[in-house]
Length: 364
Image 1 (cartoon, rainbow, N blue to C red):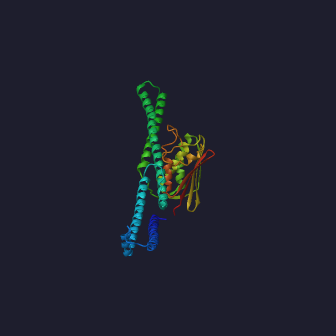
Image 2: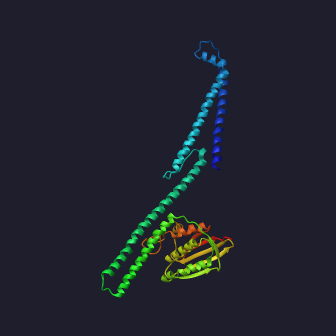
Image 3: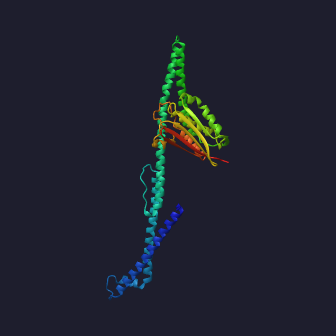
């Protein structure tokens, strides 16, 4: 039932009860009049009774008296229902104020407003849930920024320290110089990664993703991206396997879809066991749908974390100083991009494997 139908039904009930009460009042008034008339006509009056003048006046104006009493009753009944209607409005206004209140108490209204009460409580539940999620995301973001800021100090201190040694030690040997320069370079690269994470947070919060679609050979795109990850595979001594149907085509925003695949592969590398295996597959499931999979051997993700893995700023690795894992935005961004392409993405983890499954529609 729509709100308009609900208020129309409520108005009908109020007017129905008004006329019902008016009808009962009229019947009671008539029966009371007949009973009093019968009682009074059975008595003998001498004209000296205290109420005799009033009774004589009423007896001479029966119609006027009955109409007057009925009108008084009508006015009282009307004002009673008028006040009740106003009380409903006051309750609705108060409920609206409580809807935006920060407390988690449910709204209670009279039985006549039960449907409206249910709608308000549903909206309040959604509001409470969204506010809680927003607070959690804000807290995770703030915690992340604090940890990143702290992590910036360690590599920066190392870079300054080793460069200072190179400046101060004039007689330092060439092998030691190379060692110091290598450490300084490694720490500088770590600094770059951390700064990029800051930019990632800023881009995700300040930009609105829009799609610029074009047709692309999905098979070649995946092969090229996997090829670009060869140095990272070799660094962690990971093997990889491509199970990709040839010449798969997809209409998509190429840059953003490349970002999705890059995020998923980088995630697979970061959380793979050493000497593990990464498998990338892409097949045409039906004429209207493509099925992609990014699978790696790694620590099984618990169910409670698997359900939150696509949340903003959520990281599987709770050790913030770890070199693995980024700002916790990669999978959130990937999910948003996939859903903007009318697709779906989900994660499955069991028996020390982690798999991300993507379904994308095929546009003709």
